[in-house]
Length: 329
Image (tube, rainbow, N blue to C red; front, side, top):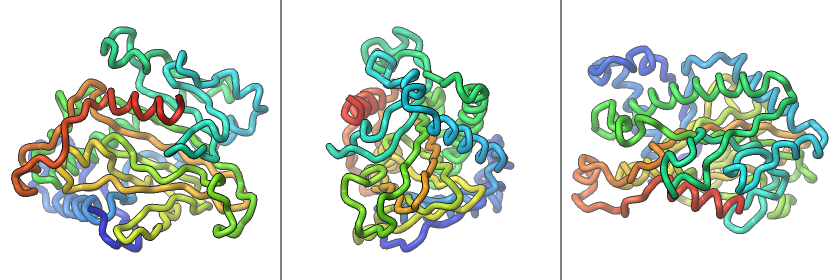
């Protein structure tokens, strides 16, 4: 459960990454220190920054620059990759098309998902089937984004090994049948400049993305370096800013990790309000369980929390399809 945190911690995960393929990594004192920091951050805020993650700053910047170039294109050209139910909810959505709790969000986006082969998960996967829709312009878009996705997937897997140790399990709790073939989601998001630079004057329908929790295991947010817009809610209901820290990812935990941990770690409400007088870009990568995983509290987490399961089991793919159809349907 989130505490009354006032800021979000920065964790240098380089020691964890250096030992992430060693089954005995938890015995390394430098890794153990990172694990303690992850545990504290997940318990207190559900959010943390990571540095020392090994993904080049130049690539973080390139990904945002290409995203911005796409959003600067004429509206008609962006519609060449328009999202629909027929496209497996992949592609471009215009400002106001994404809905959070019944309210249109003031952002435009390209949504991408791990591609599912037809029939791979039967009826469960059918709504999400289809290839990602990548724009032809900028020309290097697809190649760069697929490289970035691959690096984010590898990084997330290693951070989840640290989180598994933080919960008190083996490093590999979130592999195999749980997340050995992890599904992923990526949203390339553009938030228009504020119509008013006074945050208190911003009408409710100008919120970039309404208050929500993420639905998977772990999110990596690559945000513009010069605009503070992401806000995280603490236990008292205060909105705490997550200002950009260049070269880092902002990470947060999602609903599936909350269930696995039996509530030891909570998925924290967050929102985006761009009160800056300029356009803001953010690239959010979501690392999930396997698409067909039935998620339920881990036995050792149940023991740590009094012996009773606090959450019903949830089928990840069902949870995702329900959210997607509600948000974009």
